[in-house]
Amino acid sequence: MTTLLVSHPQGLNHLVPSGHPERPERLLAIEKALFQPRFNNLIRQKAIEIDLEIVELAHCKNYLKILRDARPAEGIGNIDADTFISAASFDAIASGVGAGLQALDAVILGEVDNAFCAIRPPGHHAEIDRPMGFCLINNIAIVAREAIRKHGADRVAIIDFDVHHGNGTEDIFKQDKNVFYASSHQMDIFPGTGKLEEEGVGNIVNCPLEAGSNGVAMREAYESRIFPALENFSPDIILISAGFDADKRDPLAGLNWQSEDFAWITGKLMDIADKYCNNRIISMLEGGYDLNALADGSIKHVNMLNSGISE
Image (cartoon, rainbow, N blue to C red; front, side):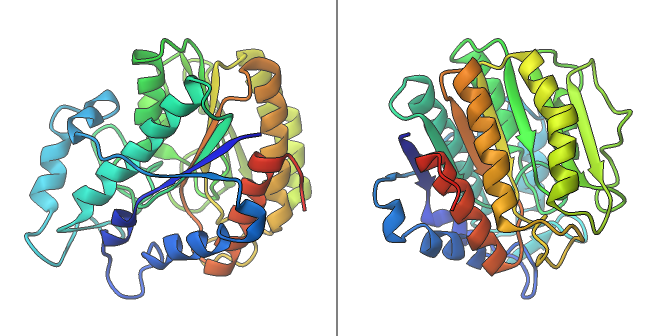
């Protein structure tokens, strides 16, 4: 496998208040983890910066105005109790979306088999008309729409294994039969969405997991519900919302996954990608707030993408 790693130092410039879990150190932890010798063969690229008008592919017409009105000239401004925007946040989100679009081109054109985008802030909570849950824009939703618009994909699948339900991604695609969205997440925590009965137009699969459950329950959910539905969808490309906060060490949730569980999901998705879409996978960072757990999960995830081997 040939794996592209895309990132940009501007991701560090999105500032949040001291003590906030979605902090710049998250990217530094991943950068350090992925500079181990086993990753010497990664293709590493600095993300492009894109015109943010492209957010209209996934968000409402005045979405940028919402963000601009909240952005301070200096320092940090708040959008809600958990979501903040700083003077340089637009640079971070421009390179974050740019990373996804850069990876999309490389994967679709066959330059690489798959890609991982180490970006922040995350995106899967950002709804059509509302930033929330640490998320300013829905990065992966824009990449999905661009796969359809620019590259002619008919069936784009998004698999979200972040411990929190991607309410924003579901909100954007719940009426879009060209996009399949599946999420495993802890039930009864933020944002409170992602119930079994939320099915969109038959394109949404939610697998809420009980607090305290481990990789056994996760694997049963994927093997009984998510993977069969994904295979039935027969995707042209698979996008992954890769949150590593289901790890038992994460401070914001209560699942008991091991870092090896992220390798298992990744390997299974690679099998499906090999069968249906010429190995095309793009993974984009979402949550993960214990730095050691985030680093370990990223190592397992990217090592599987890069080598097909679980260590």
